[in-house]
Structures are given as structure tokens and as C-alpha cells.
Length: 363
Image (cartoon, rainbow, N blue to C red; front, side, top):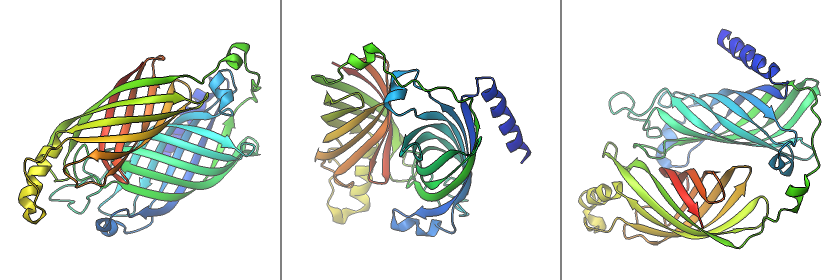
């Protein structure tokens, strides 16, 4: 409790020093764990619960993207979550978020991304039941939809809704089934806001800009390390090459159509292991490990940051252990109109395969 008090005092001081265009928020969480695999039911021993603290920066339309998105918020969060399960333990996460508003700013959609530290990762000797977390450091992704009234008892506000949390290491190291929870989210916020007037008029340059364009062609190189599903089989690099056409529709959206080549070195070891461990499957140890996919995607442009979603299908997949459909979700940072960097997670439904760090060029 003492540390929580120091945290609030620190944030309040920073906010007051910045013309009070900020708010602080605390929420309590309680819900259920979503068992997305049959071998995870033994990990569900109670209802997960937790605490979330947010430091929120408000926008007032000084930049064009703020007006386009109905004056969103952005900020930093701290999330503590107790899974109420001895094998899973607790998680502590830090990250950033965006809040988007609808229905006269009473419906809030929150998208947040960060990193988490878990207390009970897999250990062969002391915690072999935990097949969800193969490493103590994980990726944390949260999605929330809440009713929000920030001036219910001015300057104190109230919110209540649902939040979905996801923890995974992207199979940087096995095991990595990951954990998903859905929780009731109830809390209060305190506004340190001096009612800054919102700028609602677009400047002449922004209002005349036409975002519709011809088709651009993108090349992207994604890489990282991962491990096959066989625990402690060794981390190997992967190289994912992508080429796609992009058609910008408007200020916010672009559609994508393209192809991927997946060169995942850990697949070589996995194929050899599978051919020996399961001879009845008649898998040749020399089966080609490469995969080729085609995908459709959508890119949501916010400012220099954009959110990318893709769904693909393997048209070449000699080793068919995974399902033929894959998906990718992540963020891009556009340095300019030509060069970008990305951080994405590639999965097969709920099962992550790789955390991808990418660089690309748009032609």
C-alpha cells in the first residue's frame, strides 16, 4: 500500500507539471481463464483477479490525427494479475495504450501492448505442469470495452466493462501455450484536467489532402528466434520474407494482398524429431521445412504508428503439423512514406509461433 501511495504521488506531480491535461486511473479485475487447449484445464484452479493502474494523456485536437479519431487518449499502464493457480503464479506487466471513444465518449475501446514478468514459468523439475509460460518474460496484449463517465463526481469518474488479456512469449522458448483471461473491470479515475478547449477545425492543408492512392508495393523482412514445440530442443533463427500490394482507401485504412515465404530453422529439427517419434505418420526426415502463404490484410493508420492485421493460408506446406490458416497482428512505425519498422506476432489461432521484428520499404 505504501508503494502504491508513492506511485500516485509521483504521477500526480508529473501531471500537475504538465498543465493538468492528464488523469490517473485505478481498476480492480476479476474473471476467468479461457482454456484454448484441452491440456490446459489442469492449470485453471481459480478465478484470476488483479489491479490495473493507468497514467492517461488526453488529446485536444492540436494534431490532425487527434481530431480524426475523436480525441483519443494514450498513456502507460501497470497491470498486476494473480491467476489463482499455483503452477501459473502471478504476472506484472508494463506497457502503453490507446483509448478510443464512441457514443458521446461514454463507450471506450482500449488497445494496449506491453511486456510482463511472471513468477512461475515452466521448470522441468519444480514446475513441469506449467506448459503456458516457457520464459519469465512475456508479451502482454490487452483489449478492453467499457462504459466510461470521467466526470461523474467531478473531477472523479467511474468506469465498468470487460477486458481480455493475453500472455505469451511467441514461442521464443517452449513450452508456450500462453494464457488468455476475460475479466470484469471496475474502477475510478481522477482528472487533472483544466478543461482545455478542443480544436475541432481542420486546417486547410489537412482538409484538402487526398489519401486515396494507387497501389503501393511493399517488401518486408521479419526475423527473430523461436523454438520448436519440443521443450528445450534449442532456439533457432527464422527469416520471414513478405511482398504485398497496398491500396490506401482513406485517412484511416488500407487493404493488403500479398504472399509470405517462411524459412523457420526450428522446423528442420521438429521434422526430424517427428519422423522418428511418430513412424506411423510416415513423415520423411528430409521433408521440406519451407512454407509459402498468401494473405489479405488491413492497416489502420493512427499517426506515425499503425495497427496491422493479416490472415493467411499456406499454399505450400509439405509438413502439415500446423493448421493451414495463420494470422498476424502487430504495430508498424512509419519513419516516412517509404521506410517502416514493425513488431508483430504470428499465430495459428490461439497458438503463437513467432515474435517478428521487421523492416520494410514501400515502393
